[in-house]
Length: 154
Image (tube, rainbow, N blue to C red):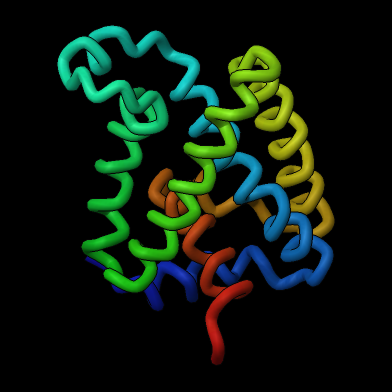
């Protein structure tokens, strides 16, 4: 298994252009956020009826999937897993409240599509293919790379 630094080094190869990097700093978190919203939009009766906690922010499919996603990050770096867990919590809370105002699935699809258009535009500027076309695990490395570049002191 590669280390987080090895993943970042390989990911950085197709993320050198400052405009592409700026686009990623916006669009990668937006895609993560929208996926959480889409997963929260899946009917969750089985989870809510099983747990009976009356806590809709955690009784949903997004929370279940995020637990597995965090295992991936923990294996790479506990510190990064904590950062992603905090961001995931913010995503769960904001998506819950957005869902009280508008249909969450529709909002999430809109954000998802716009953010991916931005991503591909950034890679067009960069002149290199997105990393996930080489390895799907890069879809999970992107959020960590953004967190590392925006919130870590080097």
